[in-house]
Image: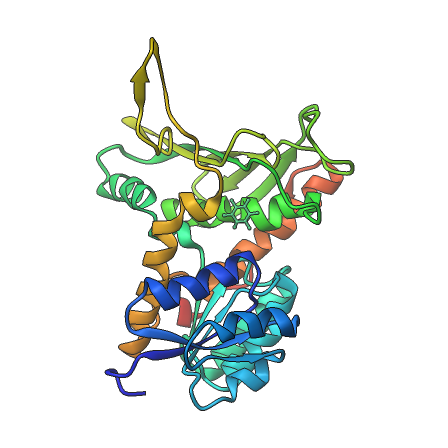
Length: 339
Ligand code: ISE
């Protein structure tokens, strides 16, 4: 592909996240255009494609990837559909941005990792968008600068106002805490070695069959302890906090994202309603970075190794959630391709 031509992107999956990426690629990102949208719901795909010049609707990702005007693939379908789409994209040596989770389990992630290794070069960026969030980048910089010394503990809070009715208890780990798994590995630059999930008395808002909130404890290679509160149905808004406790001080983000207003003898502010708004800038930066790197012929950002490592931690987390015990994380040896 000539670096002058806009990158033709096939967006696979047009649910909440996929539709938002279609809008982003069409209206916000430079250097790319949506040439294909893919959804098992043919009507949904068609109604999206109809609104975009030069865009074709498909129901089969493999057929879309074979189209002449498709240079790259953004996968935003549900997790269980990722493996087949990733394997097909890798077979065609197409650049991919794959939403998290890479795959629902570590075995599937390993199969994808092996497919990329057979190719001999990286092709896939995994959509851990918090790595592109301005607050998280500042937090990472303070830790990397080293003045605070070693990180001993991380406190993280991840609150959602409510989850869709199909959201399961396991998804609190696989779909939500997976972000804190990646953030922890990235901030501390090390692997998570064990997970223990604790369940306090549930909120009255917890749906049947789901203990909500939960407290997830990670142990890491250096002996750091990382606590994550995951609350799926807090009711009041979307909040994500992180605080690192280091040898010589602490550094935190996410306390208040919105302006603080004082009036009428009171002070306060708005809580962001959902992750699309809270992380809008991060998603924009992430997708722009992917498009720019792809047009330069490079692959940057979180790798399949990061997706695999998070999947292995998720697996340990779901087992701990089910059995109420500490579970160790097992990883294969890190291949040279991933540094
Ligand atoms: C959702 O799928 C996301 O990825 C959001 O970032 C996360 O906050 C939410 O809990 C997930 O369900």
